[in-house]
Length: 78
Image 1: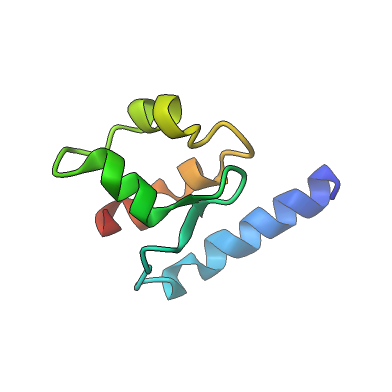
Image 2 (image 1 turned 45 degrees about the horizontal axis):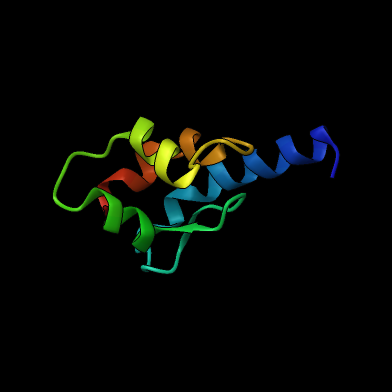
């Protein structure tokens, strides 16, 4: 997949993101590293979501970084 195709895919995902209000535990937040909502919940626990910590522990956002761009959409599901 070239960079133009990747950019179009990311844009489409952002536009469709509002339809994904009910994320399941198995929903992938970071497709590059196969990080699920459940894995993030396990790390975060009852604490505030810390993207730096999630990046260090899970590698979140170290691939294409689209998961970080969609942070506002999924952070409330933690």
